[in-house]
Image (cartoon, rainbow, N blue to C red; front, side, top):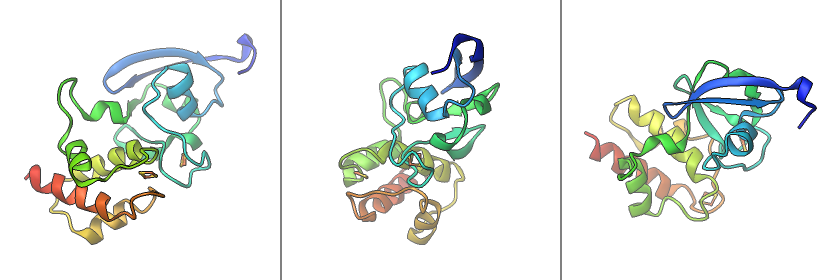
Length: 160
Ligand code: FES
Ligand code: FES
């Protein structure tokens, strides 16, 4: 982190709650969430924009937070995996991941859930091909992807 004089104040909403924190403007959005705002649910994988583990939404659009400067969060609506569930109830997609074994080590899971939830929001009847296309930027080294696809298909059925 740089000297105080170089810090900037970032104001945004995260999962619907207002946040205001000071950080260096070139801090990544991922580090801003994890180490400045203290919200560690968003995970770090490659830190090079390649794996999707760090996926969040910015005004509803999925981005890899490790390659987005924190300054780009200014005044924006940030969505993380924490915003997908209610305090006492998991989302249909989170339940499906549990039931179908879509999560193993868990590093990719927050990004998978954020990216998958965005697809479900589109409201179309999902096919395996559509899911694989939409989720192509999210890498998993554990599950072989079949259980993740099954989780999305199940959640899609649940929500219809
Ligand atoms: S940690 Fe951001 S894309 Fe891999
Ligand atoms: S569950 Fe381990 S990387 Fe996906």
